[in-house]
Length: 115
Length: 111
Image (cartoon, rainbow over all chains, first blue to last red; front, side, top):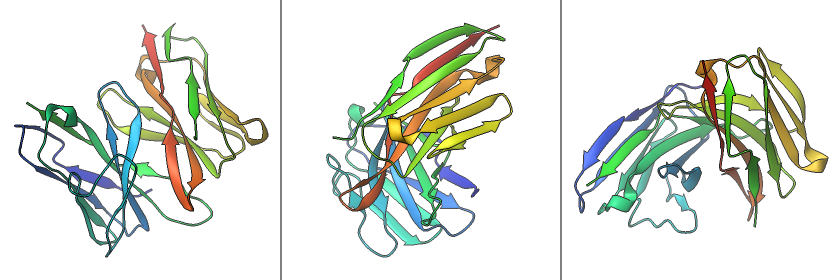
């Protein structure tokens, strides 16, 4: 399976600021996703990061709040904009290759606290 | 809408005990995955199991797709098995594949 890294691993930010999270994979992958895990909750899909085009957002998530880039097949970024304490969560990227076997693998996550 | 339900929500056991975690899902699936989230938040892939039975050491899983459920078995539990176990089901929603997570089972293994 691919080796996935995320930066930063954790951060404490002030409300009103923005944070960009990076996701790097050691091999080319077809699909990259971003998830949010609020404290004590399950994972919720934010968006699918599409190479060379705009991300596909899930209901309840908008591009202005969570802009996503995916310049190539090994890298993606998620920005959490104009943060509020409600954005305190773990943000995880995941990857998969399309085909008959469609298994997702997750990065280590970025633990964000907004004060 | 699509629903993935896990039971029990919490499970506390002594080291050495066996456990069964259940995942029910509401619709036909392409794929089902079991994950273990350790205390540091890392999601570890346990099984990719859209149907049938798989075993890996002390862990095994069975998915009965026609009856829309999956079971994760943990035998001879160790304290390192503690954490949250998630079932995630891959559905086709509006033409796109989406992984939908259950709420998880929090397993605590006491020494």
